[in-house]
Image: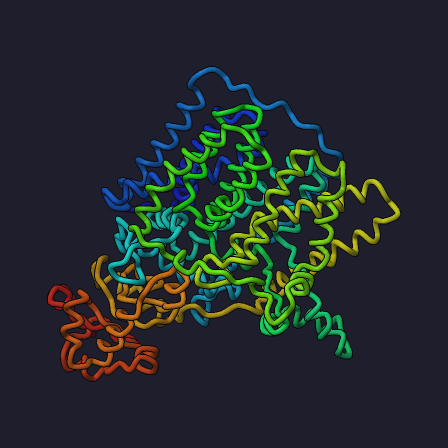
Length: 638
């Protein structure tokens, strides 16, 4: 028996709160050096990640059911209460220096502005209207077809232990933990197109708070921390010059800029590759919502370990060990960065961090990858990264503008930061050199994941320089405002473009939504489908059913090999002489024939009409039962 629809949002929020509570209480008890905001901003993601891992283990044993989700949530809440009440009261960190009034005001303004904007964004990012299911911006349209498919396969496809939903019989070597959490919310009664935006909004706000809390520790000021978060989540280099240049060539530049604030094609043509961080990475990829706060917590605990010793290093290793299923990009970034921290902050206690990290993470990675190298098989030298055809220095000047020289000035400015903060930021810088020499995954653009903490370090340096210059030289304030505007204008223009709906795109038509619903109702959860390769195919996206092979762009970027499955799919759809044998060998239960299958993959619906029963029929699609079990279980379509 499910949760009544009216209570589903409250049940989902209660579930998230129950998962999060142990993380907050655990940090309060065992990481007393953290301030209250840090315990909240890091503790909620920590508890959610740990609780979702526990739920994944239970689902592998018993399935993802209400009877598993609710008792687990109760157990998490009870654990939080027990930890909070057990033992002596912890010695909490002394309150930090009270921020200035101006710093408090700036933090409040930044938080209010982001929360308000994100509330509008996530309320409207997935909508069902006259065209069907629409995505609010292009990267979400591209990536959330995969994430909706992952959530659906956990919530409706009984995919436990997880296997790859888009490549039959292969391990699911992907950081899918955010989708496990969202799938539990779906099982509690939320529609996926509500669960994912709600989860993204809540954890985006936590990410904002985490970046402010961390930047305040590094820069020493609330105002600089607010500026660092603003630069990270809204900044975007000098890509703004492309639309401004085009607008200046017209008779009414302001009107033209407001009508056409961003053109992705022209940005690519100008070789502007460094993204607007939130819209290019955090919002569409979702795993950042877990990975970034966890990574920042690891850095914070390692910093505390310089004073508290072994316990903090052990705790940091435990936290870092949660990353393989939460966010592999953060895992890689930590692996690249921590050796430089060892060099700059030498102590024998590092051994405890690495031993615990390996002990917790390696079993998860072995389970994920089944011994295969995955995407890392594509590791290769590529000096210059994405710079070509531009010269390497010009590429970065064009993409980041004045951020790099200002950050360099910040590192050279004695007295701007504490010695420990300066050394920490220096330790983040080699990732930039490594990412510009070595590509770690099949798609070279994915090196942006390795550069995440480096870029945040640059943002903190720039923010510290601007904040110090603002307080020291009042005469320079107009120039600092102009400088900050140049660093934020790309993000503002792109966000305005999204707000205007210029990147909205249909993900599924109403017919395809109905097709997905009928498939869920008429086919068993573990059925295998032979369907098209479109990234937003209704079967792979919103039925929860496995497909023989799905969108090959995602499979390639994850280091998967799929040539045989694609050949089999084409032969099955074309109903070649070996089609029946391939259907039996690959254990295909249903074949879907729609516009893509007919026009691009050579499907022959007439041959299937003569050989198999059609069990679902819409204006453009037909679904055929092709295995003996599927034929016996499925009524014919009307």
